[in-house]
Amino acid sequence: MKARAILLVAGVAAVIAVGVFVAARSPWVQSLFARNSEDPAEIERATNAALTNHKPADTATGYPQWRGAGHAGVAPAGSFRTDWDKSPPKQLWRTPIGGGYGSCAVVGGRLYVQDRQGENERVVCLDAETGRLVWEHTYPSGQAGKDRTYAIGPRATPTVAGSWVFTVGGAGKLLALEIEGDRPQVRWEHDLITEFNADLPQWGVACSPLLLGEMVVVQPGGNGAAVVAFDRASGAVKWRAGSNPPGYSSPVAASIGGLEVIFAFLGDALLAVRAADGKVMSEFKWATRFSGNIATPLVVDSEYVFISSAYEMGCALLRAERRGDEVTLVKVYEQRRNGFANHHATSVYKDKHLFGIDGTQGSGGLKCVTLMTGKSVPDWEAREIGQASLILAGEHLILQTARGDLCLVEANPKEYTLVSKLPKVLTGNNNWATPTLVNGLLYVRDEEKVLCFDVRP
Image 1 (tube, helix red, strand yellow):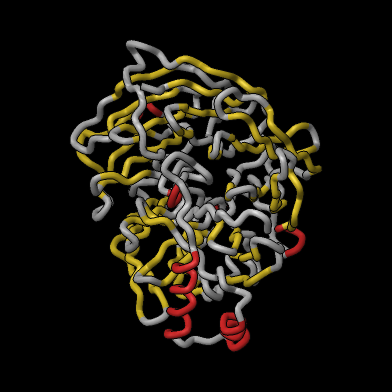
Image 2 (cartoon, rainbow, N blue to C red):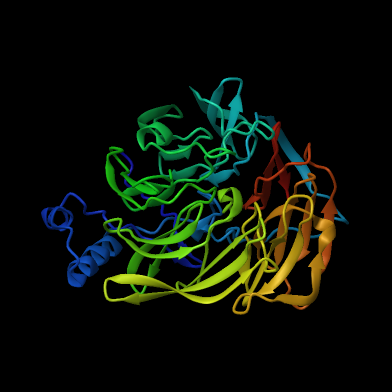
């Protein structure tokens, strides 16, 4: 590995996640694996070693992965214009791309996105200021899922760390690219479906890769490989865990009482997996029709984990409690059927409240919910928004609706206020990618293009 400036991608709010095995090649850590030790002191030392060796990534000005730093769906700090009605944002550039539902990762003046062109999938790097193509990596790919009703391109968002880019394609191709002089080099790859005997999900493989220290973690799903961790540099399998069927969510990580934990939302359950060795420490059953657990688990204050699904499921809040060398998921509440139900889009958290889309495709709307009760704030609802994806940017929510509108809403739990709306900036009615805001530039994509709008103050 030539680049040692490790960009970390997991954590909650201001907590930047750390990897567990930076020192994985040291003899005492190898012996830890060899013995499959359950000694809390050894696990604690391994975690502390990783904490010591990690260098925090500069996430203040970048958005290097799915939902940004900590997978919280929060734009990097920085001001942006909100007077869109008075002065509509100028479109800086438009770059054609193919189908897909993944979002844009933006870091170091580069934008990374995935698409499909004919029988191939692509990883594309653009200049974030101009939209100019910097490089592309193309590879043949099968169908992204069994259902051809929707876009056949990748569903996941690239994960960027220094000169490395990690991607998952719609048919399950995991790639590790290292960039040398604006030329991508494949360092390793895996076919998650064939290698782990996993079932190709009906609507394609959707998990975005989690980079945790020296590990890349994904969710193939299936017998003995619901969650799999790979060595970041070599691609060798470090561990595999669980036998749950695949869903459409992405793994996240958080430090719970000093113990690094991966939360994986599979097709029938939420797993709490010990990052050090892949042990499934706790499981909360959440079997959804079509294995349709799509929204990413939202970790709040390094203690609570919120999950939500549509298809008549609702939501649940779990407390992650450390007990010795393990973490247990304890139910705070569970609201099924009539509960707050995220379909495609993951909610965001602010001021003890969740903001998110409630309801399935065709019937969704924006709601505000009190985190600790799961109850909707009275008179705070916007059904006219419909299905949408969203991020939190300061005191506002930026939403990209499925119909292609851009909406700006105050993130105020006391009342709903639509600040501005830019109608039909995107094409079609299935615009499920999440917007990205970095340094006052707002990026959105559909199945035909990436657009950049200038909202700098």
